[in-house]
Image (cartoon, rainbow, N blue to C red; front, side, top):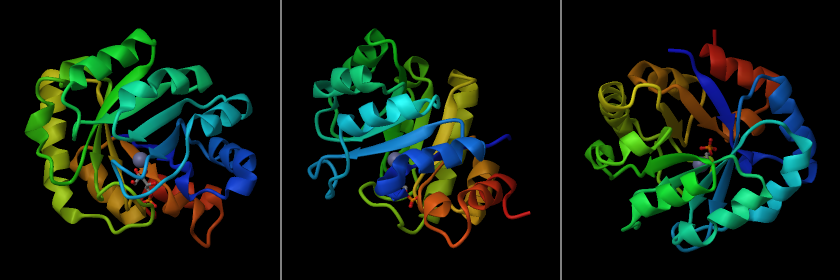
Length: 219
Ligand code: DX5
Ligand code: ZN
């Protein structure tokens, strides 16, 4: 399965954000992953819509916005107006996920659902027809640079089967602890989009080298 890399700017050097975004574009990234944390849904703070607004004029890459926040509905419009192209919203803690997905659609944006490591694939069944992407978290959300949870691989395969059955063409994305070795395992399990922060921006290799290694699996 062909793999696409979605660099997460959480691991980028914010003082050089514009250059870092250019580097990943030149190295073949097709999307930029923006991790939004509120210190409540996850025990960490990151960035808000002003970062999206400042990135918008400096890249033509789509900006996918991963909302790790307690009430995503309150912020969709602000992010959309700032330049987000798609949203990844969590199943966990959202009692009205269908409404959230419809609100994203009403803004004309792409919609994806994210599930945490302890959440079973089965919860996706009813929402899958309404989304373009599923994000399987391969770490507990909240921090970059965590160890990949191998226990999530079986779920990646189960989500792949469900997508093939119910929504062919839906992207299956993995997020957390993805390096060139775990990337290979995830692609074998059925993922086609790999979110990568530390293994793109935080290695002793250049960004193009790091991206190429992720894409080829070290070969
Ligand atoms: C984790 C975030 C990830 C994170 C990935 O809560 O959703 O996108 O930035 O970082 P790495 O690739 O360093 O595990
Ligand atoms: Zn993320």
